[in-house]
Length: 442
Ligand SMILES: [Zn+2]
Image 1 (spheres, rainbow, N blue to C red):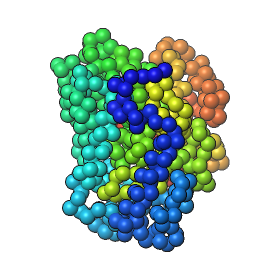
Image 2: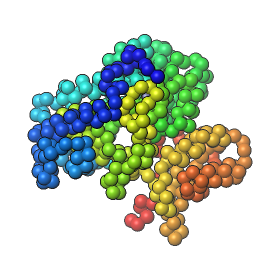
Image 3: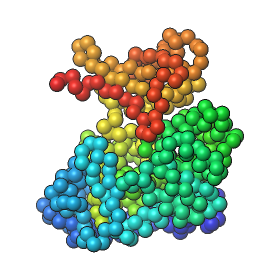
Image 4: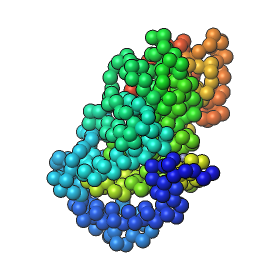
């Protein structure tokens, strides 16, 4: 269906053909590889060692010859050439902003931006917010962490759209609720678990979020839940709002992809970041629709180019045109982290798959946890704890859940049915997996 140009932030770019996307990406890739080679001592060394030169790149397919890079290399190069490392490809005078990763798995890595990188990023965030229906009449509340976190400045994207933007950050939930009420906030960005928690907290205070509050757009990121239809539906019903999943990573942009109003996959920032989806074992590309590891190459971010960065995120994608008229590649959300993937008796189990089953069933509250132990004969044992929301017999509920797990995920589990409210409610990223196997050989 033809759409009016006013429904797009950048009509020409967003609706161009796939062939035009590919030629744009190739042109950007070649100049970005040249910039990396000329500006970064690290890339010059590894390209030379592999007898690669940006001038030899003639198609997008040629990128596969370049080596991949991962978080441990970012950390290592940063330590080798303090403070920002030799992957950086511009003089320090040109860097105006850094965000850092949380450092939960080592020293934090800094993600530097030049002034132009920063402006490009915020313009992209505005485009993404616009595609999710955010407009200048909205009152937008940014409820993400501002401390060093790459998700913080994304609020400026909402401001660029013209929405009234409240830089709330991670204030206590009672304060956040009162802000939402006082200023009749219409849109917010937080994590899926927190959106749920906040709605439940409101209900405890006697507020019906869907009826009493005016929040109608909820942007979420940071957990797979925003792309799990059942989780999204639960949050949408609770708030009487639309939930849009966004995806970002600390080493590139606060958000690199997001749902349009069709809510059918996350449109990718293809003119900023090139995606590959690879089989983590063989490094070969997977077919469209198949699951693989997301590997990213920046196309414009000059301060620290990332060439073939392994994210560890397991995704699948489509290049089919979207009903909204946009033609960019869409992710089907993040199915899990490579390091979140549990292998139970040889079967790959993503916590998001179990979440989807539990949240689809109204006999459960939707809260759950997974515990993995290595039991007798060193066999893996999975225990699923789920809270019941009804008074149905616990043995019957356990048998039903185990049967579904077996047929959908392919593993059987010990099921523990808990009463509603027994599992801790997450206020940030939910910790739902306890894997006790790691220490077994110590
Ligand atoms: Zn769309």
